[in-house]
Image (cartoon, rainbow, N blue to C red; front, side, top):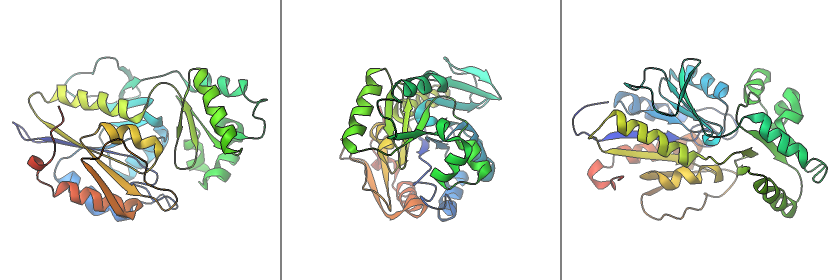
Length: 285
C-alpha cells in the first residue's frame, strides 16, 4: 500500500445494486476498475447487508483478501494478521479478528415474534420463510439462499403491508431497541449499528496501522441503508439504480453521481475518483 506520506486510499463498497447488478448479481462491468484498484494497492472493502457466508463466497470469486463489513455494519471481519496488531474490541474467531456491534440474530427474531399478531400478514422474515421462501423472495438458487439465511446479527424481512402500517411497525421496533434499515428489497432489523459507524471504526484501524499517512476514502452505495457510510466518507459515490432514486444525503460536497446503473455506474464513478488528483480531494481529518 505504499509508504511514507503517500495518501492511503480506501474503497468501501456496497454490493447489491452497486458492485453487483440489481437483477443478475454479476459484476463483470466492474472488472477493469477492480483490477486498477488491485494494481494500485487500494483496499476494496465490501460493506453490505449480506451475511459473512455470502461475502466469503464473493471474496472467493474475486480472490479478495481485505477486511469486510457484514449485515449493515453489525460486524467487521478482519483477516487475522492483516494489521500489525489485533485491533482493540475484537475477538479472534474462524481466522478473523471480529468486531461485533450488537446482539445476535435470535434477539431480533424474538422482537419480531412480539409483533407477529399485531402485524399479522404484513411481513415475512427470512427465518419464517425458510430456505424455499428465501429462494422465492430473492430469486437465488438453493446454495445462495442458504448463505443468505446464515444471519448472525440481524433479521431481514419482506414488508407486505401498507406504508402507514410500515411506519408504525418500524416505530414499534425502534421503541423495543432495534434499528430498522431499508435496503433495496428488504427491511433489516438489527441493533444500534450502521454502515457508517462500522466504516469509521475500520478507517480508524487503518489509521492506527499506518501512522502519519493521510487517509482518502470513497464510499459507494445506491440505497437508503448506505446513507450513513455515504455521509461519513471523504467522497461519496451514488450509483444509479434501475428501481429507485438516489438516496438523499445531507452533504452536498464530495459527491459523485453515476449516470449508468449497477456495476457499470460503479466502474464509472471509481474511474472518476481514481483520476482525480488526491490534492483536489478534501482531506479527512
